[in-house]
Length: 237
Ligand SMILES: [Zn+2]
Image 1 (cartoon, rainbow, N blue to C red):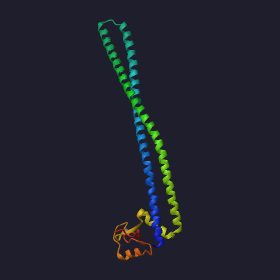
Image 2 (cartoon, rainbow, N blue to C red):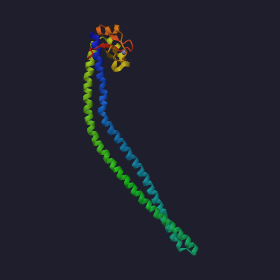
Image 3 (cartoon, rainbow, N blue to C red):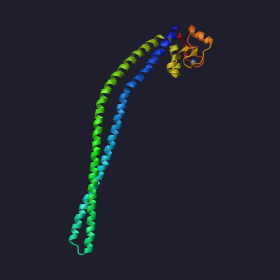
Image 4 (cartoon, helix red, strand yellow):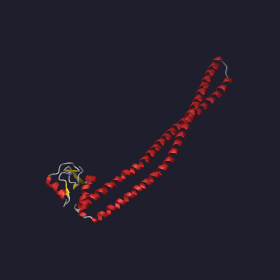
């Protein structure tokens, strides 16, 4: 085979290999990303619970203020009671007292209910925080594993890069830039074999003249339909 063509095939294979590293790095980081996403969503849940707890605390404070007002009112009623002269006045005052007492009962019940609610939110927050802790420990372990994996992939990547650089330095630079131009659009199918007399990139049939040129392989030949670089490969039966 023509030396330039075999170099191009080799370069194309190295480029393919280089391209295969990024997905491997992504794959390695996938588990880590999952854990990070889970952690984010747990933290978000905690924030929501904390914000709900703050709202409940405000409601409790409001009810406590209301209780203070009501106990002042009871004192007032007690003072007024000393000055009562008629039965009508006494009745009105006792109605007022009853109402205030009812409101006190209601406020106390409401505070109790809110306290129970806030306790349950606290429990949920504690459970979530424990989960986050466990997750963070797990995350550290995974991160170490991923780092080692990524390091290894990058090491391999570097080797292939060096191999490519070395090869490129030995090649005809015009041919390399011709290949790079095709690679811009054809990516990893820039240099393709002919199979069953069809281009391995666009799959359109190659005429006999070009087919025999490719088989002879004296020159770099491109597909007349798509422009990819063609080479001949013995086909298995
Ligand atoms: Zn083609």
